[in-house]
Image (cartoon, rainbow, N blue to C red; front, top):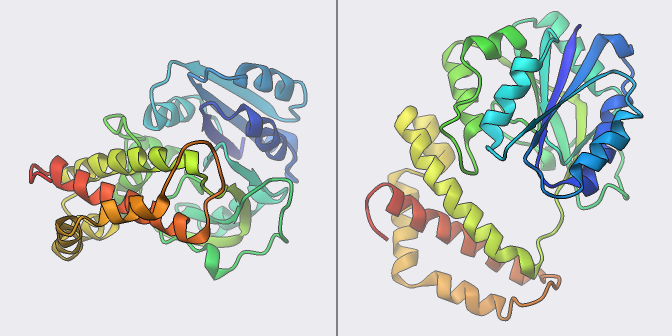
Length: 300
């Protein structure tokens, strides 16, 4: 078998069937690839969505159920079950185009040892999709971004897969990317290996989750820096003297309170205006750097 599409899911029943159908609707022969899904302890209607999708599967389809354990452990379970020569990682909020697997395999033919990075077009809804043309506004500089990336299965197994000590949100794929980069693996970008990435506009009810997620990401950023004390880590995470000094000053003038004032009443679930959305993102950024200092042992 040439390829495995691997994804993990948690409480995304409303999206999952669309995502799986897109995985099944590939232009390569059905016996050339498989789909391996890890259900990471979902508590919504995900099991029913999986069973409906199973009845429509046109290729080998493996489902692994595990207690909620996080992405790193879920990815490793998927890697252990994969049988394709190449493993293609996606998330449960992306729609691959029909030529998705074919485009990953096309680049692997000429670069058999490389990582292949595909493009992602951000959309607010799967019901209104723009033309499938990647542009620089959708650029991601991540070396290994599991929204759309493939690698030889034996290569990801050789480095030990994902580090399961990354139990909170963030950086587990960056850790893998750094280990692959340091092992001398090259990356090729293929803008034709495309997915649509569901990125709905945040609403008032999402703001506190954004803040909590930013704090979790700061804690894992410190963990990443401890494993990889390298300039690439410090640049990617913002854990460097210049950015920390800027945000220390911003805490000194209590910019977080200013942003909360701009946001006003967050009760209910209303649409955020453009200015409120900017304030919400800046509030999450301040929470990130405040938590970064705490996690580094520097206080707030």
